[in-house]
Length: 53
Image (cartoon, rainbow, N blue to C red; front, side):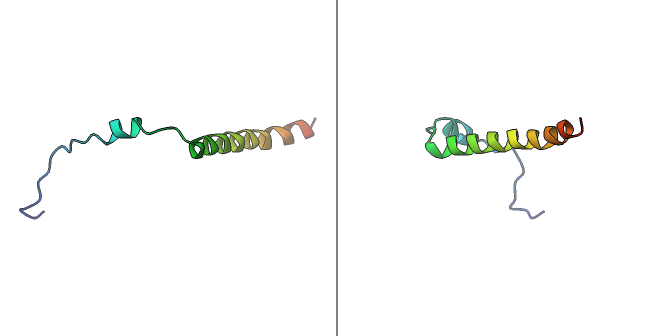
């Protein structure tokens, strides 16, 4: 490690700033898309189980 590099705690206010960002249409598209994929993934496991009956 070189002499000019200091180790220590980094203090930041980034999480507080991110928390104040507005919720936009893009966020809803991501949430709905992930939710849809999650449901389809669950169906992918469930449908073959029904077909065996």
